Length: 298
Image (tube, rainbow, N blue to C red):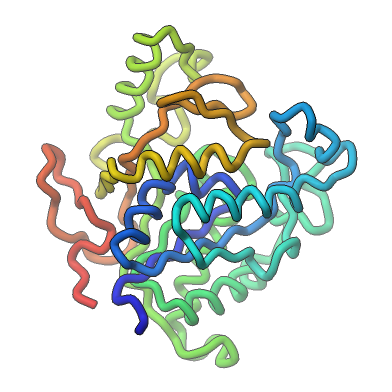
């Protein structure tokens, strides 16, 4: 029997899903929802934080992408997610690297893909899975990474095309996604995290910025519409982070990427509704949903 609640997440690289939505994914799996992850690249341009694996890097053997498939498999096992896929198949689109780098010009760079061509692969997934809820990034990709921006464009276009009966009859019957959320971080929560790190003697990962308002992926609290609290899944999220060992290190309640600066491992994850009707607010002090499926009946 098909689960009544179905969630699709569209991310750029392996590990993005765990950082942004790991606890949410584990929660909905535990509650019996069908959770699908669609990852757009293999993350070939990521930095390698494990010295013994340095030869995998793009300027050496260029085998990091293949290795990260196994890391993603471990992370999905930790979260309980059985349905995870790569856009158009593993390796169709390559990690484009940071904005302005030579990797942007690679022939397979995701950044250079025609949006409608890439979105067609996503439409096939949407029409197969028939999710009520889709999660992706905002139009700046959270922090301006080319692949995150492109993942946003592809996901939003796929939602539009999937509902169009005139598009791609070979991709299955049309499907209208009820709600689309963008990942986000409320500025108030960012401030609390910085204060928590300071109390433990940890440097802020945003110390070079003049003000919290300049952190690219932090948004005003009034733009946030949902806070999914999954305290019972904190361990699963931490285990999934540890599975992405070439990309991050985890130390108790903090993790660090290649900048080696600590960020909190959060069991509450935040979202901004951009398509669909907002459901009833949860019991917390803010007027936010506490369930991405809030207000949906089937």
